[in-house]
Length: 218
Image (cartoon, rainbow, N blue to C red; front, side, top):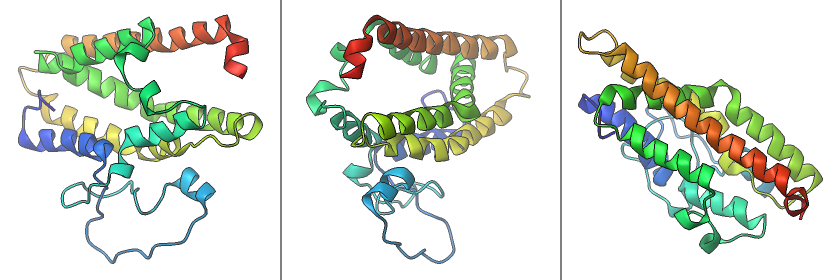
């Protein structure tokens, strides 16, 4: 968002950020769809229609605290016996998780906008290529077999909306790719470095899981 070369690209970035902070997407045009009553299980799998939409724009949308993605993560944590004060702060992170967070800050906030563009493009398109579906499938099995109280809305919703995020990054790339000053090498560099950081994060989780299987089963 900081490095966006045009106002329109800045808006595309803010669209994602504001939605994650709790501004609900508002559909453009057409009649307002009737609210269909859903069970709590359906709301968790498909999204509570009061707080969730995957289409439209945040421009003119309504902000709800309960629509913020971090509050959805709190619901996931509570299903595992954790609470607000147990998550979300740097002191809770493992070294490999903190490495990923630091690399996100360094690369997304790079003074070189081409590096930032490459990092953003790589993350969103990697995520849209099946990552969220794998998470949803795996966590659904865990819910069925071990933690029936586990809430999955954070993951199921991201699985549905990730293609839209990837589309925003493609629009950003199209706007700058053919300009003479665009540095293809730095674009690839930003993408490679953030994907390396993602690998560090997931390899770290795998090592923690392998080291303490008993703890993970509790």
